Amino acid sequence: MRLDPASRRAWRGGREIQLSRKEFDLVQALISKAGSVVSRDELMRDVWNATFWTSSKTIDVHLGWVRRKLGDDTRHPTLITTVRGQGLRFETGAPAVL
Image (cartoon, rainbow, N blue to C red):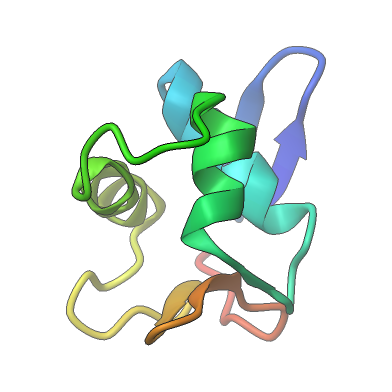
């Protein structure tokens, strides 16, 4: 996975992935702390600029869209994993898609 924050473009393998503004921000927030768990509170603050939950499903909906676009199995994800009760983690050892 590769991101270009200046042009707001993303690639997985050699394929460019079209992400919306919020999807890009979500992926960037997770990749910036790859291998570490990022709490939902952090994501709401950093991606949505909110200190409160506008909707408990906001992150889940965007995460579902991102997983599909990245080709990460939504039922058994290996790229972005959910750590129950803690948050989300961008996996550093995720298999590459060519």
